[in-house]
Image (cartoon, rainbow, N blue to C red; front, side):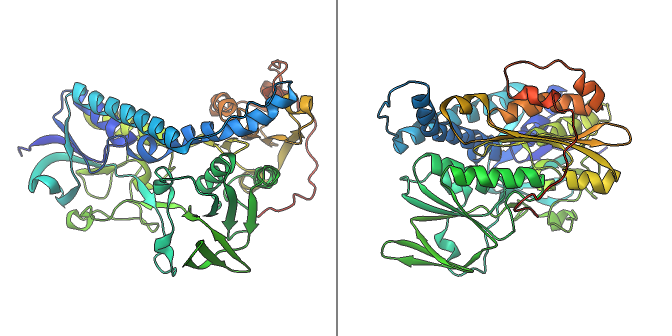
Length: 460
């Protein structure tokens, strides 16, 4: 029987890799984890956690205006970017330290270095200039921002990674990209007082989300002062004495900062996949089966590097399923159906299940329930912000197959909706639930009449 240095070697200490490593080590296996950056991965270090802190910080300006409508006098508060950055970095360091402690307490060895495959059972640790063998190898290196390499002046722009560490807050920013990262950062910078322009090549932002949601969020973002330019993309970026000039299809815009939020790609560069014979899918991700196995018997992959559903909780569940299967003898595969997601835009989005368009393709006939209204808090001071709630129901079975919420606390609301939908709730069961009043969420269980389709506005 072959003898190895480790039972499991994990490349990447993000959410998925850490969960898999901890569970495997707690089974008594000898485990090592290599990480070339800070422990915690995209989510903790340069993703959802610091981004959520920035969302919190940026929302106060709007809340101060709301407070005036409720009788509070203006406070004259000001925002200090360096103070926020220092506090954010302290908290990220604390969270990263918890990940390190948890790994070590579980009995795993942590190596701070880039690692790459030498063959199906061997990993080279670059910083140590040595190799280790392992019976099983798990790749959990996540993704990285995609930046166009053929665009003149692209090197002048930043990505979301650098946005967390800007030395000073710009007065003007142009964000290229209409996905959730671009939309979230547009709300963040706008809320912090930055003149914000969002440019997207498509006919509307948030491709993949329900068309009503897309049109509604665009409208609400514009109400808050974000300039949204659709059907437009960069031709080049030029340095000027006063900033950066973005030459776009249709117009030129000068700003202090240009940020690319054009999507993310699996981080497979320099991993040595070809040396071990690991195959990639057409989208550049590592190809895996439902148990996260690659085509090489001793190698697995989880999380964003596989590009199944690129969400932190999904990576965690995939990592846990791998450990359950390989180290506890309990074959487990993660069910990627009915996974809820949130976009921390302003206003925020919560979504689970199918869009109306996808539901019609899958089921044929569907019932749609739609409500668009001013939340109670907004009506009090005469604001113009509106919330949106939409249900998509399979007409034959009456199962709720899509739920979409845009408005205050939408990400919190959608978690509970996802539980019911995962259990196969029907519209009749949904409606039998008594409303909680007065809340925004009560609208979910009070919609009785199907929506009659009308012109949606800017949709695709």
